[in-house]
Length: 253
Image 1 (spheres, rainbow, N blue to C red):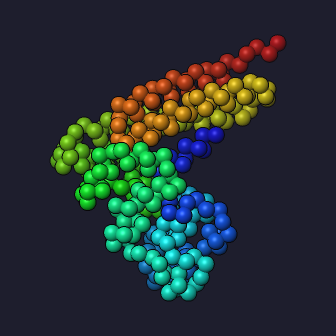
Image 2: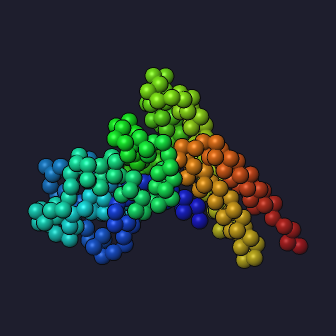
């Protein structure tokens, strides 16, 4: 159940979406680049190969375009727009929309942020998806790493206002990690419950705890930390109550 949260981490996925089609499964892009060590973007391909994108059959063509069904270089690259050009789907400015084809929740939330407006106005300091999630690995920064990333603008140099934001973000995301771990524990315990009726009520309680955590993460993509904190508090309370119910099952005598 908790794996549903993985789709909010946010990650860089392409215009065509999370496709489990035959074309995606036989994508030749990475195979060709692996076979030719002199081809460009080797580190990018290596990163992708160990990512959730690869494990979910999200091939290179999903983000970059091109024809993944051929080994012919000209045909494979014919429709690809270089990332340095403004109309590329993986340019800094267009990347949120490209990722949002699959990650709709984070994209909608990010669109209402001041960071997104900076990006759309051409500000090179405006963060985009890869700022926190990497180019192809679909990683989620640790709370400590996030503080460092936020501090590159909202830090002692005060390129952006609110220098205290970086530390506040770290604290909140450390608490998100705690609740996330607690929900994973609850999920594993619920799976062990034999009584179908009791398991059903616990599954419902799990969902009631999971929803505000998802909302907190979405608030994080808007960088609205007061709402994040409020939703996180609800998730923390409900998760604690769920764990208490799991630790104290009703007397079966």
